Image (cartoon, rainbow, N blue to C red; front, side):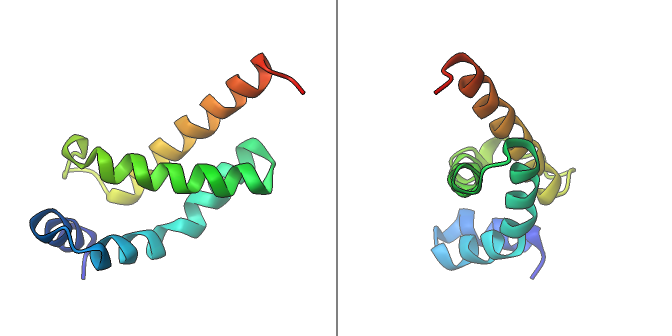
Length: 92
C-alpha cells in the first residue's frame, strides 16, 4: 500500500493498523533525524513518539501534494529544535 492509501484507510476507518504501518515505515528515519539534532537517546525516543502523535492529530493539515515522509521530517526537525530551545532555557 502507498502512504496515500494508508492515510485514506486510516481517515476512513480509524483502524490503528494503518497507523502502525506508517509508523513502522518511517520511525527509524525520523528517530535518526531527531537524534542527530538532540544527541540524546531517550529524548530522541520520546520526540519520535511525539512526532507521530502530532502527525496523526493534525492529519487535516497534511498537504497531499507532498510526500508523507517529507511532512513527518519537517515535524521531526521542528520538534527537535523546540526541544533544544527548551533545554537551553532550562539547563540542568
